[in-house]
Image (cartoon, rainbow, N blue to C red):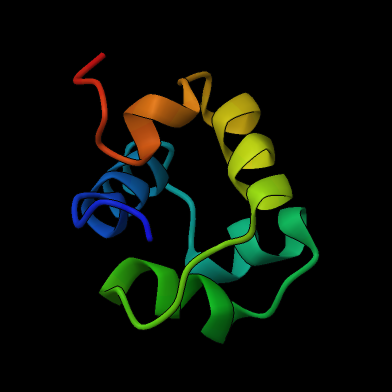
Length: 70
């Protein structure tokens, strides 16, 4: 289970890039509702998506899941 800060960090990173949920979803080849679910904590991405998110946003997986603050 991901730490509870993942939804907030994902949303913050997406908004910093001025991306819509639909744009991020298209990049990741998932639905907009999937991205929305991640941002509200309804569901969680799999490991491969976590890696893709970390690369896309230039942060570590540890940052995304709340194990580090940088």
